Length: 584
Image 1 (cartoon, helix red, strand yellow):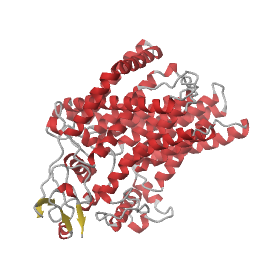
Image 2 (cartoon, rainbow, N blue to C red; image 1 turned 135 degrees about the vertical axis):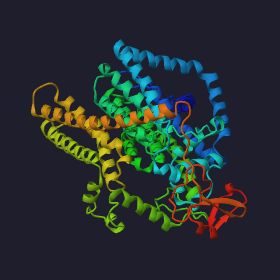
Image 3 (tube, rainbow, N blue to C red; image 1 turned 60 degrees about the horizontal axis):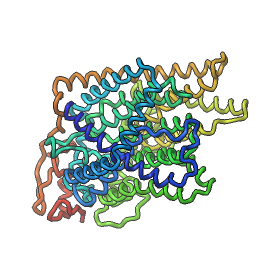
Image 4 (cartoon, rainbow, N blue to C red; image 1 turned 45 degrees about the vertical axis):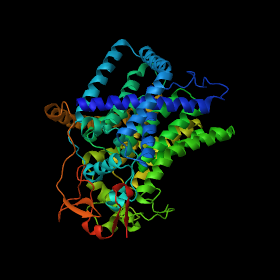
């Protein structure tokens, strides 16, 4: 646990400083010509919290690690260069940073009664300890031993290597998060590669949700507060994966943060385009971490309409350029490892490079993912059927708790749609600002359902209706006794019951992880698992392959791993592993 907390402190300090620098630069570029720099919201200028700095820091350090990986392994020297920047930045901007933080603390003190502040501090401390303990055990996901750990090892040792996916096709599943994991692995300091960034992302979202909920009485509206409750629930649900370099926690956390802050901006009647546009840039980052999060980028409609309406072409181009800068390192690393701009999107095939992975392998990978998500007990042809014949099999294969979740979400969305239509007919008005995030969530659910309907990809869009929809309609119905009020209360009870069910079950499971960590991992996080493999050689390089009939697992220490020994006959290997790999 102690090693995890040390790791997190280092991540917090560096990402906060880098993120603060990023936001300061972007605010200078995009807001220096604003006629009213104090914003147009009722509360004055956009209230930027340190969470923006921290998430911006995660985004910037990830992009930095991706670019660095094109030239060398992302390890000690990458950290030294980053630390030099942080020290120089602190020297010049320490007073402003301290003042911003002091102002934020002052605002929190003003919004919360003393008993609430004390409870919040206790909850934050307890959460830190519990999540650190949950992050201290052994990795539990098959994906970790399958390819995540191996990918991180490659990035640490050699960076982004050309055609590395020819050794093992799963190495082409190129998530930007793996570069962040490699940057903060602390292997050179602790002697083992840390794998607790998932716990850090969860802790960050937990803090964000708890602080928002604690200031409940000071808020004009409570729709964002309801989604903050879902943030807390989500961080409890995924504690099982905190000890893994799991690539679904960060995108879900980012989308939760984006949607909650979006609702807060609406609550504050914020009309400044900058915070909305910056949240959309976070959406681009969420997509490069996990392409399944791409639907969140549709939120860009709001700032885009305003900018185009006001003919602010320079600003529009600037925001687009910033989003492109976030995406370009991801595209570059994709092409480097697989030959495709976006791995699995074979339709975007614009690079003819010698190390490109065979397109048939890519198509098989896509088909396997869809098959496993939809109907693992059915044939490949049945699972890939374009109709809905696979749905009953998929629903039956899901756990009881997941079925309850899906039915509840569908009922909540139906209630929201009917209530919205009836309200529009009756009052002849619509609250347009609240429609966009709800529409994005619905589109996200449809996209998820017809691509890879596994719950891990879509927690945020599934929990959103259970909390936000009742909050919207409770607010609209006011305190009067009416059918709409009774319906909203019923919806709130249903959503609350589902959240309580998941919270209770996963809290008990988390306590089990905490107990195990207290007994075994109080000081140092448990290392990756170790496997025995058969060594084979080519051109003076040693590779490791499975024994006949062995599982497809390699982990961190079997390095470099070759998926099939037969590939050795076709594999072109250079004098150094960093030279890349080609298939003849």
